[in-house]
Length: 341
Length: 273
Image (cartoon, rainbow over all chains, first blue to last red):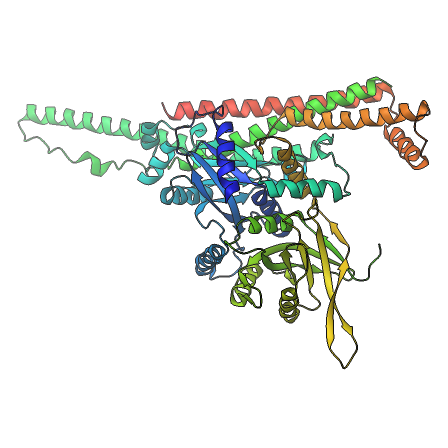
């Protein structure tokens, strides 16, 4: 327990210079090494075939820092009574962990991703329900493929307050989104992560360094890039196709709307003309019919999906750019190496 | 030293878990015990997961919460059905008589369980991690005893685990014990710097050998030959071509992704008009 107090003061010293541009209750995430290892292992064991692996994060909130001290994985949804199993599983797990003094407070969840494709309706819904219940919760996205390429890829996201508002209202029409002035860049905010280990774990690390005979692999300096680029671009193309379909839908909607406006206008005009004619002939004017019943306005398409797709495309592009910049660096290094021959 | 028995392969997750549960132990408890999960092969046992089990230990008696252990195992089995109970662990340096009792219990759960000890109190100046298997000893018919025979312990990693552990190891050199996650080109830079360090060490060694300060080692010489031969000899022209086409690919992809980003931003603005 003494080590915790010590760690709090030590980390407080690091806290001051970190970026504080987020106006959310959580400005930084502190993860223990154990959690990182567990997430990696969970994906390694379970995630080879299926899409995503998920799990729960446990920890506590200290000032404006979210400390994640432990985690446990979720079983896959293989059986039909998955719902009941999940809740019960979670309850039992938390109860058991409490017995061994592990922090049993739910602070978020983690998910693995395939080449960066995680911006989906399901994620949004889950994160919204989490953030609604627990103010400071985050979702950790672990990218195993990028990690295998040489550097641990772990990112923490929260929903921006604006997006939370919209999700609460469930108002996904174009007018609603315009009012909130939300763009795809304001959907998720990334929270910086730092990794901290206790002293004992550091001792363990020193020990492992001594004993382990595995050579230092330098996957990061691997030059081959076409495979990764191909897959990323394919995913990007799919998304862009989805996006264009969505745009077409929106276009037809707006065209229909304007056509309807025109029709309404014409109808009104005709009515007025007829009324004038009747008046000159001395007959009673025709009643003004209820226009809105005759011309039903077309359904405005929900814009939430568009927003999600745009966010996803943005994410893909960022990843691709990061990847290409790294590879360019590597290629220039290789050129320098060969140049000496 | 060659020992009889299977080789025990441990993943770093297990060790980190044990350390963590030791840190969180109840007041007054001097050590922690728990169950080890993993898979059994013909000649090796791979330990991939573990969880701690609450227990009470005093001078003459030991009480372990078996219900809890069973429950936890069920829960864990739902996530990873391939893991089985393969033994148990305890922190502390020595094996006590209580360990024998606990070991007996675990023999009921698994065939030939292994016992892992981890010295978290650092009695010797290192954290010694050892594994044992129990064997019967003594004169048959008379009092039979149990002997714990040590096994060889190896550390294995998955690829991604290796990278995770590398990152974690970098926290130990900083005074605050914290480390942020870097990204982009700085990672490549870091990796290159490490390779450069290794090369300088090697060059220093070669200089020493050449000037006669250190005796030449044949095996090291062979490794160096392999290394030098690994650099492929390509004609300058071919290399230029390959390099240029690669760079062109990457630049094109960057351009396309920038274009896409601009496109969706525009689309956004238009919709919100």
